[in-house]
Length: 113
Image (cartoon, rainbow, N blue to C red):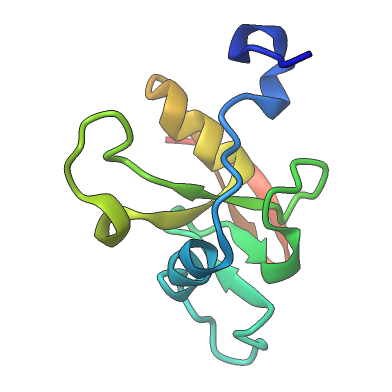
C-alpha cells in the first residue's frame, strides 16, 4: 500500500530520496565552518548545523534534506539545490513561517525572524 502525502505525519512530508550524486552536490553547497571536519559538519544557509550522515533523518537535530526551490516550476534544476536542516526544509516548503532553526554554539535552536 502506497501512502499519499496527506497520509503521512507532518515530519515525514516532502522527503525525497535523491541519488548519491545529488546529495553530494547539495552537501558541497553547505557552509564550511573552520575548525570542524567539513566532511561531517557544516551549516545550512540559515546557520543551522547539519551532519553529513544525518541526511534524511528527521529524528536528529542535525538532520538535513536537499531543498530544490525550483521543484514544480521547471527552472533551476541541479544548480538550484541546496541543503537545509530538516526543520528549515519544512519551513521553506510551508513558506509562511516566522522562525528558522539556527546554531547556538554547538546546538540548533529555533529563532524568530
